[in-house]
Image (cartoon, rainbow over all chains, first blue to last red; front, side):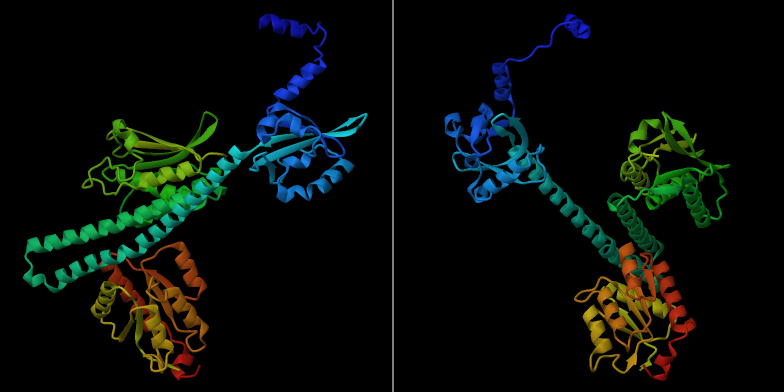
Length: 377
Length: 149
């Protein structure tokens, strides 16, 4: 190899001009069927691939009108097309927008792509057509189209399903909650303390399930709704989410530090849900913290902007880091920290829909940091 | 066309119907409540000869969306499409917090869109506020009072 490369570099040897029989060999070996046609439409050359593709022996094709390779239903118009082409012959590439068919000797048809190139000879223009069987590709395309159709159908069904979940599952829960309360109110005198506790548990269960439905719906919406990237002020989204939390829990005192002026491109609605969930998470796990602190900012990592949300709350054991983003996964006892385990799964869907990634670092009783990217800047 | 003090509750779910009635009673809202159990029944009450509201329109319609036979949004379309009921206050009261339902509801002319909470304490508060606003604070359309069109 090295020696060959050297002699090439030297460019001292004479170029290797192929002989005519070698050229013929290249035409024979070409992966596409090659058919040369003269101005009167007669075949003057075919290669072995043509024999294989169309099932005609070479002897039958040479001197025959090229129309023998054209299905009957197109054969009538073909000579007109052919003479139009010969009157202004140009190179035409493969698959230039036409659905073309070839006819085999056994009468079967197959989808083809044809490229045409005119060669001016002393005896007139010869058109070289190179013909490719695209049956396999067409089959793949058809399979892809059907798969896409099925996926869209499933997606529509899923949407209809979550809609009916939203509507139809809430009504019975309202009855469970409402009539348990009605019992507590109207029959308090005949219920002992244990009976009342049971009814309170029924109500808690109904309300918890309502929350689960709500969160699952949000998760489904986050997965299905279209992603619209637009210029956004990420700091602003974080501050707004933080303000919402402060309004919802006015009794909590938390030190917030949000880096201002972080501009980016992303889906404002989805990222707002992301901040609601991540900040609520930080908010929740600093609940037992004397001087709770939540920080949002960005840094560069490997040339990519990387956002972070840091808190000094309960943290988590890195051993379970892989479980953080799973649906219904919880690393804390519900008695200590409330939650249903869908928030971080939702966050991860939002990040991955933006083409970004999210990971977390933490230590028990030593706070947590969530890092995430949202893809292109 | 005069308006009565009645509230038309369009609701197919028996539990929700009973809970809404309970919430009205709990908050001493005196207005009579007439229940239609599907969209067709609601339209019959409003528009048919001999319908409950043939002579006097209700003061307020509380409209659920997901109803048998004729859906809530269709009922709303019919109400807004008829000169007699065009200005009738309609509050959509539904389980659905789907954006497209809220959008469609407002597009078709709902006066308000309220999501029913699962927690009955909150649901009852929703009903109290609706009653206090639409049946007391809110001035009714004078043409409805006078009996003109």
